[in-house]
Image 1 (tube, rainbow, N blue to C red):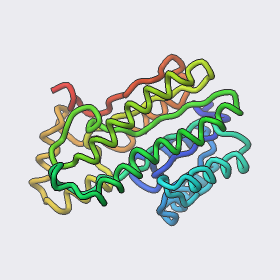
Image 2 (image 1 turned 45 degrees about the vertical axis):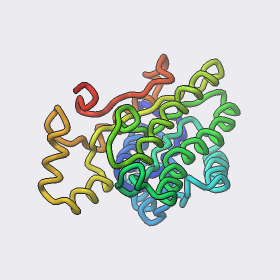
Image 3 (image 1 turned 180 degrees about the vertical axis):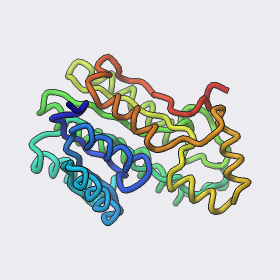
Image 4 (image 1 turned 90 degrees about the vertical axis):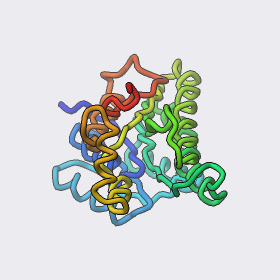
Amino acid sequence: MGRLDGKVAIVTGAASGIGRATALLFAAEGAEVVVADRDEEGARHVVEEIEAARGLAVALKVDVSSPSGVLDMVHTTETNFGKLDVIFNNAGIEGEQGLTADCTLENWDKVIDINLKGVFLGMKYAIPAMLRNGGGTIINNASVAGVVGFAGIPAYCASKGGVIQLTKTAALEYAKQGIRVNAVCPGVIMTPMIRRFVSASGADGLHAMEAMEPIGRLGKPEEVAQVVLFLASDESAFCTGAPFLVDGGFVAV
C-alpha cells in the first residue's frame, strides 16, 4: 500500500531538482502524477523514469505565470484522471543578484510572476477542482528566504515571503471545506539552481554554502520531497497553514 494510493497529483517545476524528486516519490507511493514544467523534454524524461518503475504519469509543458496555461493544466488533469487531489506548486527561479536599489524592474517582474503569481494561479485553479472532488491538499514551495532576509536577492525574498502569507490565507479560507494548504521552506538544497551558483563561484562558493548550514552539508532534493509527501498524505490531516522548514537548522541560528 502506498501513502498516496488512489490520489491524482500535479507537480510543477517537475523536470528537475525538488520537483523531479517529488514527482518520482509521489508515483512510487501510488499517485498518478502530472509532471508539469516549461522544459517539456525534461518533463518527459521524468515521466519515462516513472513509467520504468511501473508508475503512471503524463508530461505537460506549462508556464506557471500564464493564467490560461495553468487553467489548462488543471483541466487536462481532470480530463485525464477524473479529479485532482494534490498540487505541489514548486516551480520557481532565483533571478538576478543585486542590491534592492539595483534590482531591475524586469528582474522583479519575472521573479514575482513565476515564484508568487505562479503559486497564486496554481491555487486559484486547483481549488475549484478540489472542491468538486470534496477536498484536497496544496503544498507550496517557499524557502528559508521567505522567513529571513538575504542581501542581494530582494525579489526572490519578497516572492517567497509572499508564498508563505498566501499559504496561510488560503488555509484559513478553505479549512472547513476539506482543503489543506501548507508550505515547505527548504534551506540550501543541491538543485540545478545551486549548481549554477557553484559553477560560477567555484569550490569557495560551495564551501561557503555548506558553512551556512548548521548540519554541515547541503540538503538533497529527496529530503525535501519526503516532507512534501508527508504533507500530501493523510498522515498530515491536522496540518494546515504552516511553513515547514527543511533547512538543516539554518533558521535556528
